[in-house]
Image (cartoon, rainbow, N blue to C red; front, top):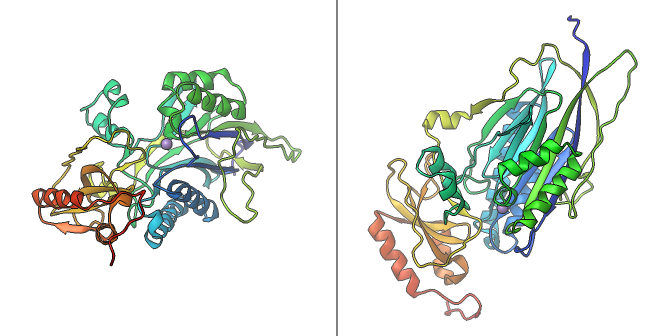
Amino acid sequence: MNDSPQRRLRLTWGGATDQGRVRANNQDAMYADWGLFVVADGMGGHQGGEVAANLAVRTMTRAKRDTIRELHDAVQEANKVVYETAIAQPELHGMGTTLTSLAVIREGGSRKFVALNVGDSRIYHYRNNQLTQLTDDHSYVAELMRRGELDEEAAAVHPYRNMLTRAIGVHSEVEIDEWLVDPVAGDRFLLCSDGLTNEVSDDAIAERLSIGQDPSATARELVHLANERGGRDNSTALVVDVQIDDIDGESDQGSVEHEDGGETPGVSPAEESTPEKIAATDAFELGTKSSSSYPKKQRSWLNDRVGISVATVLIASVLLIASAAMVATIGWYARDGYHVGVVANHVVIQKGRVGGLLWFNPTLEEWTEIQVAQLNDQDQRNLIAGKPLTDLAQAREFLAQLRTRLVDPDSESRGGG
Ligand code: MN
């Protein structure tokens, strides 16, 4: 027994998503209900990006998520579903998605936020007029920046700035980053896709959050700002506000307000009647004063074991330049062999074994402009399975031969057999 007053955690949220000014469709997806907020940014040709993002979000929403363990399992399950669907359906091969989620769990007598992230969608935490990027981007340029090899200015124009080093649906298992945050009244969280953060600076985001408009209006403003500044990608913003109310004797039910922002609800978590957004309220006790007001970052055990934050595989959500040789060399640590395979619809040389070996997934060695649709049927089958080769010279030789066999994806002519 303790005599701390009963407190109620009250959340208010609102989201907005838009396809932007350039893209033909919206491959972002989002979801919000009491206790779970998710943003996913899909990638892959045909309908792949949309399928991947929505499969991942839907899987999250259906999973058990009362504990940190269950939340991790939910993300692994989302990864598995996307991965297996991509294998089963050739037209979806190479699809993947980012997945960033903020969930509320009960631990002991108190509530905690659990943030989980894979990819370069972000969660920002706004507290005491200070904007903090909670998540780390799993992108090629972010890895370079963390290692001090690239500054912000160079990163902004880097040709590989859209390449991910980690994504949902690329391998049979995925490494997940985790952060825990004790709720404090006045906290604001922003979950968003890179379409927002590539157009709108952190300063501009902080300014929008500082104005104190309701979550829905704030989300709409942010997406609007991204479009104003170019709108080169789909952008999604989901804002969550935290209030903590004292509960006096009356069992006041309170109310959780939420509003859907945005023109298009990017949420399509289920074909059945799963509500996209559910308002609810929940009483809880803050048994102890929230001790650390700053997020505690915890890496998953896989990463601890490897001891290095490493690029596992690179995915491009957009191929901006069709230059002949786009080469990315990443030599984080040595692995045996090479193989030529497919990542995000493009033919790539990867260092490491086909399919990876335990948690040592292949790293991307060279990226090419060759798309899967340009391969003849035989080459498609070979490469989707992954073509093992002993060294880089052999892989390049294989690519040179492959280039002589490319077909025009628009003309449906196929060599017989
Ligand atoms: Mn994007």
